[in-house]
Amino acid sequence: MKPFISYSILAALAACGAASAQVTAKTTPVGYVSLGVTDGSAAVPANTDVAISIPLQRSTEFSGAVTSVSGSVISFSSASFEADEFSSDSSTPYICVVTSGDGEGLMALVTATSTDSLTVSVVGGGDLSAVVAGDMVSVSKAWTLSSFFSSDLPAGTRVLAFSGTTAGENLASNLQYVWSGSSWVQLVGGSGTASNTILYPGESFILRSGATAIESLIVSGEVPTYASGALISKLGTGNQDNRISFFSPVDQTIGSLGLGFTAGDRLLAFNNASTGVNKAASEILVWNGTDWIGLLGVSGIQTDAYTIKAGVGYVYRRVSTAPVGDIDWTATPSYVSEL
Image 1: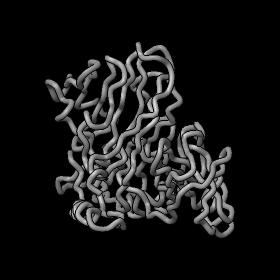
Image 2: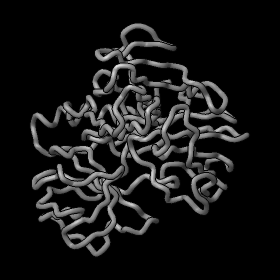
Image 3: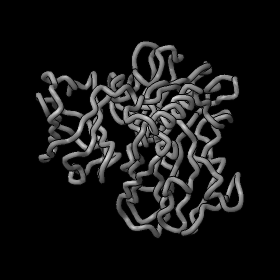
Image 4: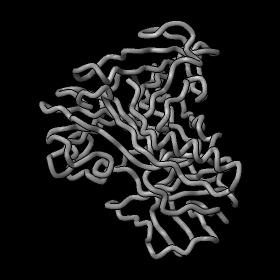
């Protein structure tokens, strides 16, 4: 089911595209996306799972050009930060994103702030070796359970997440959180208050309603205008499931995103409009080494037809014959060229 995309996003994209031919200044487009079921009924029916993801970023609070990188420290000549302006306190986490250059799309958690530099920890491991002087970096607050979801959620609503550290397919979530009515509490993979748990773009998670339906599920923010993607792993000798999404408020054709790494890899999609929990895939595509072919729910060559939907979560299944290791999948949303 296609998420509803605010006309303000589309209008802003068109306006930025028209303006860019005349002036160099650009306005960051903003808008909102409706998640879950978007046909006018409840966003999440009672006792139902929906696979969702992050389609928009929080407001940019700093953007500047890198002057140097040393280890995990990024310096800027244009910056004049206050001490710990981008607090390392877990109650207000900040994300740093590289928005140009060879490291475009690299995302890191800010761990400390000095007058003209940020100390960061790269999400998913890795380092800053691809980031050089002149590359652009932006900083914004991270999405957390408490900032991404409204406090109007019915008590008992759960978020099921996946750490990406378990080998195999058809994996159960190993991180679970429940909304008490006033805060998020961790149930699986830890314990205690979890309201400030970070949700990262590129990941996919499951929102599970309880006996009360979730009537509305809307996220608002800035439109990402840089390449992004996800870490796709192969941990063992068998098939490997990865919960992924594409960070965009606009649907993208699967062939435009560079997905497809080893012949036999599969993409699994789930019907958010159907009721129930622990759903089986409703659509399956397989990569034959050249094209995406429909196996379940769709048929024929789907490379230029099938869309990865905004705000929706998927499973990318690495075939057993794929090499063990990680792929840093990165792609640029189609609308960026119009900005």
